Image (cartoon, rainbow, N blue to C red):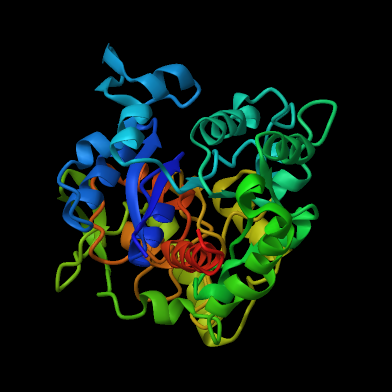
Length: 410
């Protein structure tokens, strides 16, 4: 079968796209993303790893809400420059087979709703899915794959649950999806991702193409096809990052690529594996917490003890415990975009290192390959890696979609 032609919406730095490319079954016709640094990384990845010489045309940095311009192209935009647009790219590719992607999840996340005084009800991102639907309706691919946080199942920014509106929208533009989307929550640890991360994966197929089989095909995606790609066991933090060079605290600050650090540099050098700067106070806290676990004392493993320690060390109160040491012999806790603000909930388990996770460690826990060299400031890189779909889970989904299309004559 010829390669399946795909476009990626809300592509970020390409975790989903990278997994689809790794499967060997897909041709990335276009990837749409509005933030500058993720686009630069996405374009570089498509060119250097996946050998698209015209990666600069395939990566469309643009606001997907401006759908008419996205379709037809734009010229000399003060922010986004110029592009021939999706219509021309897809026409040159002789159509499109699959659309993948998922709008930003912050508006739907339960944590985001707790932090926001209005419960994220006024956040424009609640309705970015409408742009996804418009692209789907225009190009009518055979299938789509839409990814988001489980919180999307309970989000209600208006009078109705947002998931009801999304389901109706997919059906209206001609796609069949599973009715009970609680069964579409996928635990990525079951697919070899060394991180506790669950996501809703909405898979849909065109009703006019698959006709009376569409319902059974969608069910088979979840209950038989995708499950073929499950890992035989859960992968631990030690397996994911344990072989990386150790980074030890130093007396003096140093700089690497313009960024300040107070830890030794990796020997041998590993790209993106440089510790973020840590204060003396935090280094001391990290040593206290990691030695507490290594010694077996476990004085600071309860939430109440961690909250009390935070107040003692900072003079501040917090409703949530700020500190968390990841465990060597378990999957990590969730790698979030919030990691760009601080890494206190992702403290490295080795007491000799006294630090939080590096960009490379976060990337490995997101199953990005080491040959994906990230470019940008640490803040930008932590954010876009935390926002990404783990590429290994994406590869499993890509294989399942490929199986569905080939087994059903499409």
